[in-house]
Image 1 (cartoon, rainbow, N blue to C red):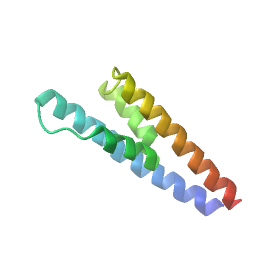
Image 2 (image 1 turned 135 degrees about the vertical axis):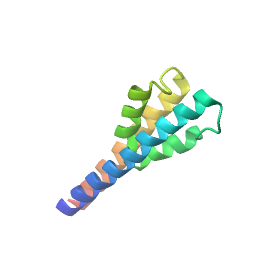
Image 3 (image 1 turned 90 degrees about the vertical axis):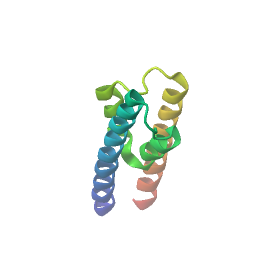
Image 4 (image 1 turned 90 degrees about the horizontal axis):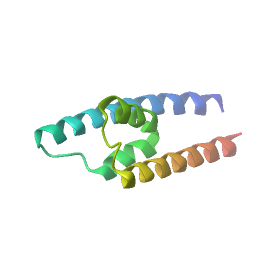
Length: 93
């Protein structure tokens, strides 16, 4: 169980960093009219454990904070991630 927890923390840290950077890139792309990162990709990063970084990216870059449908989907993805991680932890103990 301890190795699972360590692996999960490492994965969450890496994915959070990737998600945070992705939000920054997408915000800059939105401001300059360049090609954007699809919302589906941002949600996938959150689902894969990067939701803390995604949340930080939303706050720091003030990005994706007004679109209600995105925010609802984001929190559903967070809930799904936590349910899956909690279920995996339960099965491993």
